[in-house]
Each structure stands twice: as C-alpha cells, then as structure tokens.
Length: 494
Image (cartoon, rainbow, N blue to C red; front, side, top):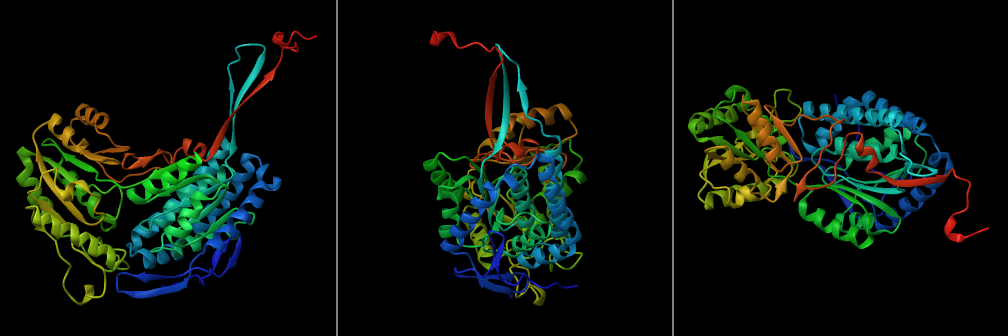
C-alpha cells in the first residue's frame, strides 16, 4: 500500500504555509525517483515561527498547566503516532530508504517516547530540601522557554520524538529543524501533533539549510536551549555559537564504537550481534560497531565465519520484507563511504568482502553498497579513526584485557561499545573501563527510553532519555521561605 506525501507546506508556529526558502527535493534513494520537491524555510519563516512560539509559550493557558495536564497532550500525540504507524513507516522508508521493518519499529519507538514522558510528568516531583534554619527550602523546575531541536537524517521520527517529547513535557515551545535529506517525516509528525490539539505555536517544523535556518535557531536571543544530533564538526560549530550566549546545548554526535569479542564468547551469538551492530541501518548509525577487536586465539576462525555471515545478508529494496541491508540515504553519501574504503586500500587494508556496489538491474538506480569487512589495518589507520557512517567494518586482533582496553579507548569518540564473553566479571571490568556513554554486554543496539543515552569526547555532551531527560529541558530554581517571623539581625531593626 502507498500513501500520499505531505502537500509541501511547512508548519510555522502552528500554521501551514508555503516556505519562502530554496527548494528541497526528497528522493527515494533505492531507485533514484523523486518523492516531492517543496520550498524550505527561510530566515523570515524562522523569525515568524520564533515570534509565534514566544507568544504561545508565555500564554498562561500553556505555561500554567499542571504537569498531569500537559501529559494529556503527550498521550494524544502518542496515540496519533500509533494510529498512523503504517503511513509513517512508509513515508520514512521513502524518505530515508530504511527497510520498512526498521521504519515501523522507529515509529513505534516514537509513540513510546511521547507516552513515556507523559508518564514521567505524572510522577515527577520537585524537592523539599532539608532545612538548616528557621525557614523551608524547595528546589523546583521551570520551563526554559523556546527550544531548538535539530535532528539528523538517519532516524528522523525517533530523533524528533526524543527531543520534542521531553521539551514539550517540560513546558517549552519547540522549533524543530529536520535534515534536508529527510524532511518529510517531521512534517507528518506536525500533522499528528496538530490533530492532538497542542496549542498553536508550541511546535514548528522548519526544514532548511544548516547555514541559514540551523544557525539562526541557535543564535537567536529568544532561543534558550538547543538539542542537536548529527556530525561532530557541525556540533562543534553549534557549541561555539551557544557559548557566545552562555546557553545550554545538548550534543549527540558521531561515534567509532568498538566491539570486543573474547575467546570465551558464544560465537554464534557474537557473530549475529556484530553483523547487526554494523550492518543494520546500512551502517548509517552513530552507534554502529565499526571497529571490531577479536581475541587473537580465535581471530582467524571468527573472522572467516563473520565474512560468511556478511555475504549471506540480503541486500535489496527497503520495501522487500526479506531485505536486511537497504540503499544508503543518498548517492553523495555512498560516494563518501567509497572514499573511505579507497583510503583503507591505500593504507594496506585487505577487503575480505564487499568494498563495491552490488551488481545487477535491481541495484543500478539506487545508492546501494555491499556490506564490507576490512582487515590488515592498525587502530591508527585513517579508516579506524574517522566515522564512516556506512556498512564498513574494520577487524583487528588483540591479546588480553589491557591490550583491548587501550585500543578501544584510543579514539576521539566515546559513544558506545559492545562486549562478547561468557565471563561476567570480565565484562563488568571492561564496561567500567571503556570510555563510552553506552556499553552492551552480549547484545548490541538495544535501547530503552527509560535509560539515559549520550556520549563523551567527540561523541558529544549531555544525555537524552530517562527521567532526567525531562530536566534537561528545564531550569532549576531554589526557593526559601522564612518561618521565623523575626527581622534579620544584621539590619538592627526595629
């Protein structure tokens, strides 16, 4: 079944209107066909959205809502996503070339995210602190005001929800800028939010260029918080802009995540997990396990079996239920990945499998690339230092715990890690020693909205998800109330 695309209008301060910026074209990268072309947001569109957001967020009808009353809006949005999950997943597959199965799961995750933060609101308490005198003291949380949410192209519906849900729950207005390569699904979310009855102005969806729209959504004086997910270089630039304002910013950036396989692992479990960790989502994932360290005693056997598993993966159209590895999001991105594989060859890497586009008529029009495994490189190689963001895995041997900890941590990034072993104490030691925001033991890419997520170093700062994910979009305030009834003695009055 197919579904109609959005009509091309933007959601500016709760009103549907044509953009006045340059045109954006959404392409189905699996066959090169065009989804739709529409005018993006301009600077004037953003300023209009900010003005409407300021008015809507300051309105007592929203600002003074009790937490459980705000929660009702989040529940309605969650129900709207669930009711439209087939349409959402179809649109996301067309917009990003994700497999329909993955797109369906991401839509379900987005609904769960709104529902979770509604529940957090229902159970989130402020704190009466311990008095140390004749007064009572409190710690309370207020909304920040206007929040900019800048999301990536690889998992738009889930990323949109992870920012918009807690920001709205915290009482803010949200200005959402999706990536230009995947603008459609965020507009679909705006339709669902509108149908849920969220007061006008509290959400805007502003597809547009990073240079004009993105920068303005950080620099504008009315913006009180920015949450960005994307590349490390862009994150550094936005952090500089935020620093000029002394404004809080959350950054979920790139990764070069290590996966560690010990000789005492369950090899079938580990091979399946490694394949999923790097080749699902066509490798277009910040947490992809792109550096594989295998203990030397099992290295040859394990890698041979891993290559066999990679070559058995089904590469194909995202709407084929059997597809495991789909097209990349854009031909330009595939060219970037090919450049990294070329560099690996020049550094002496051996392509064990892949390293090319698949052949055949089914692949000729799409941005496909074969699952690729490279051996013969050291951890200092260019291919091991930079995020490729594609279906490319580099395999390296290691000797012992100290050896692999040193290599795993020898990276600018610190986002995720996978460990495969039957020895629980050893897994725990490594989990604490590896510099990463998330560590998986005998699994990979498992997520819970209730568990914080984020990275360190070049992988960013701040955390999303979990109960504290709500507080990231609020200001903390302390209030003291005197109970003594006596004038302060310093004044010597009366």
